[in-house]
Image (cartoon, rainbow, N blue to C red; front, side, top):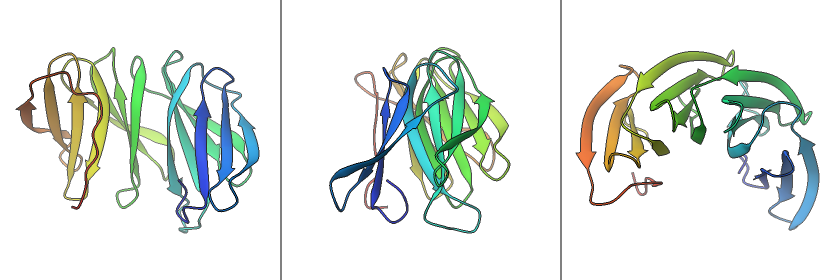
Length: 178
């Protein structure tokens, strides 16, 4: 969803497009054709630097190992950022102005600075990270499906600060109620 929660952006992997849907009118408003990246799988939205409602879309591309950046206002691809192997999940921290991407086959996390759309850090995590949740208290939770563990990362320190073991392979999770 965008900041106003009136537009939903939906990744269509097979057609390499993003559908722009009105959540108030329940209509398809537009289709964005992804001219870069192969195998789009997940998407994050962040407001622009002046906190306008529309900003940029960041789309993970599983088979080309990169993230496509799209200007949400013009609906055009503006950049492609190389990340790790098989990027799977993506999340945004609008306060830190960062995008976090789990890379399932290189077992790491890519951190993208949204101000200049550059790769600012790569942090090694556990086996097959497939999900991520952002906490507002300088914590990221990385769900490592291959190791049955959750890595807790401090984005400011750029390192793992703790690890939790779970009974089964964690895939996705959300943070609720602070």
